[in-house]
Length: 214
Ligand code: ATP
Ligand code: MG
Image (cartoon, rainbow, N blue to C red; front, side, top):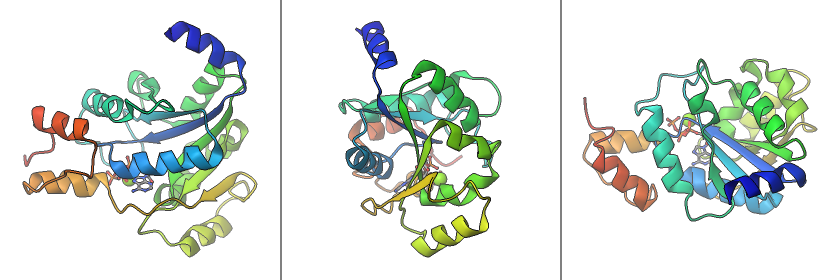
C-alpha cells in the first residue's frame, strides 16, 4: 500500500504540514497544536520530523533512534499525522532548508506549510539560509504560552524584509503549557508525566529508562 500512497501523493496537490522539532520527547503540546493547525488549514498530511543534530541548541538527551521511535508511537492512530525520518537519516547538521528541498522533490505538487511554535519563530531569521525558506513554503507560527503576541509582532518588525505577513502567518491554538524540558525535569525528580505525553510514549520512556538522573 505504501508505494501506492507515494504514487498518489506525488500527483495530487496535497496540503502538507511540515513540523520539525527535537521531540525530546514529543508531547501533547506538540500533538494538540499540530491538530489545530491541520484543522484550520485543512491539511491532508502533517509530517513530524525529529532533527538529528539541531544546530541552534544543546544536543538532545535521548538518541535520534529513541526520539524517532517515540514520534512514531505518538502519531500512530491519527490518519493525518506521519513521522518522517528524513533528518534522522541525513548526516551532519539538520538544516530545515535541506529538509524542505528534499520534501519538494518528494512531493513536487504539494502546497507546503512549515509549522513552528512562536518561541521558535523568534530565532527563525537567524537560521541557515533562512531567506530561502519562503521559496519552498508558507511559514505557520502557532501561539505558545510564554511568548506574547507583541513579542512576536515586534520580532516581525525587527527582522529581515522577507519575515513579513506575506510569508509568515500566525495561528491561534489552545495554549497547552507543556514543554519537553519540563517533562525531562519531572522524570529526573521521579514525578508523573501522565497526560502530558501519549500513553505509548510514557510507556516507552519508562521501558527504556530515558531521562533519568545521570
Ligand atoms: P524543549 O523544552 O526541549 O525545547 P519543546 O517542548 O520546546 O522542547 P521542541 O521539540 O523544541 O519542544 O519543539 C518543536 C516545535 O514545537 C517548536 O517549533 C516549538 O515551538 C513547538 N512547540 C513545542 N511545544 C509547544 C506547545 N506546547 N504549544 C505550541 N507549540 C509548541
Ligand atoms: Mg523548544
